[in-house]
Image (cartoon, rainbow, N blue to C red; front, top):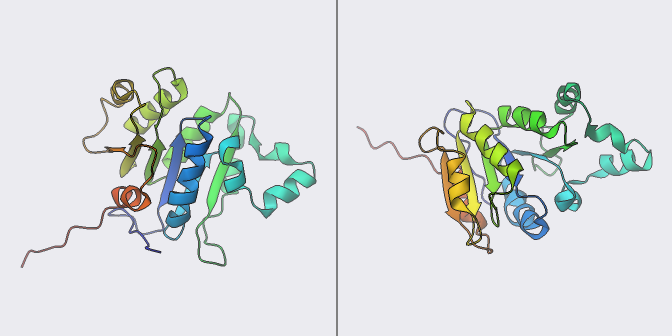
Length: 208
């Protein structure tokens, strides 16, 4: 599989933040199966976990934590827990050379603070807004955070015919120019196109 280059100026394996409309299980699972599995050859992935991708992100440590009755320890119950959880993230590749998927399990009172920190450690963002509606207040908040972030190289937004574009674009009207790239993917993901948009090949230097 192809490895994708990091954005200009990043000299470490880049970190990709995944955001999505919740309760869209099939879309979220397709992102993991067809995009993230390819991406893991190139860099790390972080996200706020949910039941829609539980079977894609669970690992052996999660299983043992569940069996030991310590699953509650994985949830960020208070804002003060966020840094502790981030310190537990693994950013070295596994024995097969694939980079990690690190997740935060959050409650309603902590997910926004966790989002701020995940954005802060990420280089690029892939946000799946297929079937997004203006009533999805969580996504509106996320778009606002992405628009104001200082460190992001690029945010790629996936849309389809059901996406309410006007509401989404209004939330990022004050974002830096060219930060957001909108791709109409319909319901048939094209992984190579998505990844190439996140990490475009550098333009050859033709100067002599």
